[in-house]
Length: 203
Image 1: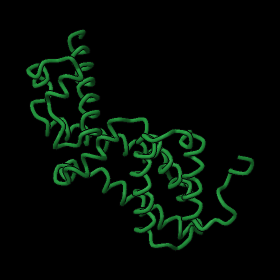
Image 2 (image 1 turned 120 degrees about the vertical axis):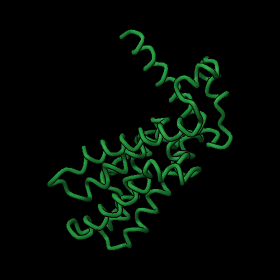
Image 3 (image 1 turned 45 degrees about the horizontal axis):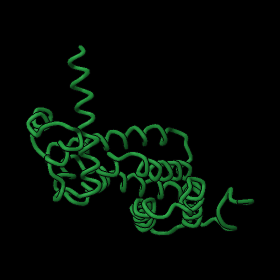
């Protein structure tokens, strides 16, 4: 059992190191040598856990899809208001992309390797489809502004991409309360709310 636990810890360490490399370098420039260097392992020992870079990438994509499905199932429950579910999922995705290196790596891998991502199957295509469905439901049930759902979701996903770069810049305007306020302002604007961002009075 101790040997199995040690092997599992090593595997997780390798996945974190690979995620760091993929997120920073992209698939093409990341190498198994760099991953091994991050873990302090030899390349031969690394091969014992993941025999190729493609398998490492596919594993990260598959894990991130599981994380997304758990997130979606926890939020989108029977009886939940679709607009509230949409807001909660977008805010959680934004937070997770900042804090979860594996999810950030999966986002870059999905862009770098669309064929591999589709084989995973594609995490972010599923995110897009589900958010589009939520926007449609929110327009029908919650009075959300009737913007084209595909365009609403494209703006949200583009903004999610942008926050990854913003989080690496000067943090004077990037504190967690401020970032959440920006997201709520965007979500309220897309929903057609008037009077600005809800909950921002007194900020």
